[in-house]
Length: 112
Length: 113
Image (cartoon, rainbow over all chains, first blue to last red; front, side):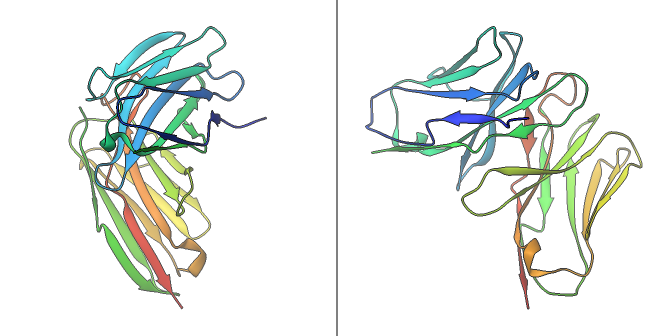
């Protein structure tokens, strides 16, 4: 079974731009969660989607948004990028029959 | 929102020694996770603990959960260099139900020969 995939793996953007990151969950998994990891703040929960609905959201500004498609693939968007948005963005997928969360390799975003 | 506190945050130990990482959490939670992260890599799932008194072991690592004390431990037995990594504990952001995890700050573990 293929694991969680994330694209792109690396990204460099300029302050003020916007960015879209993609996450494809493990086949059959309907829940996708997104996280931001920075040296200063650690791993922080962004949001979680299940069957195209956002079920849970962390404490991030409205510049951070996401969505999930009918095939369970998910995207997150960050608008008006700030230097502090530079981070490793991780997504994880899980299924209904167990509580395991499987993480993708991440997208490393650098904002200059 | 669940709060998770790990200690220690940094641990340097010698091969062959035993040690324990502690994870306290703030509110009732129906499960607790342990992950490993190597430098520049993603998170690798180690254990999911689902009930009070749960104990799981994999090689030199053993995790336990005490829901009454809101405490989980990760015990390392006879450490070897390959176990050097950062270890995170995590619990459901809302304490249960919908997915999404709150993570501790991580324990940076260095095992020296």
